[in-house]
Amino acid sequence: MRAYVDTSALAKLLKREPASAALRAWLATHEPELLSSALLATELHRVGLAYGLPRAEVGIVLAEVDLVRLTEAVLSQAERVPAAPGRTLGALDAIHLVSAQRVDLTTMLTYDDQLAAAAEHHGFTVVSPG
Image (cartoon, rainbow, N blue to C red):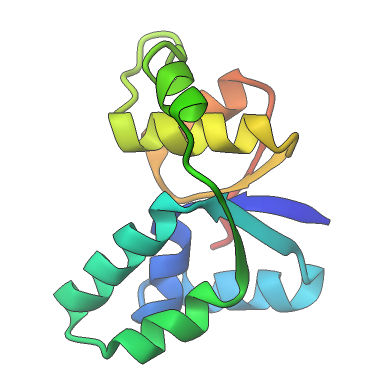
């Protein structure tokens, strides 16, 4: 199984949050190949700084993810990708959504409500354990 993962999910592996245990269990059970935009590295390191974590600890989590190059084509498409009806979609979430579309994934691992709604609108199966 291959799944796109965003920062809202991986942050739960850096700091204990309500859904952290459920996410760890889901990952252990399904053993997905995780992919994400290269944007994830910057976002996750920013989370690590906010939590006061060493870069090496963030690096351990990032090592489990295959990062997809952030290209001009992704940025251009992210400018135009529609949100779910009646919802908004921020720039970074749009980049994540388009990145997942461009690598032909159908499963999105996220806890972000806007991204989850947009992903479902675009045909993804959204997984948010816990």
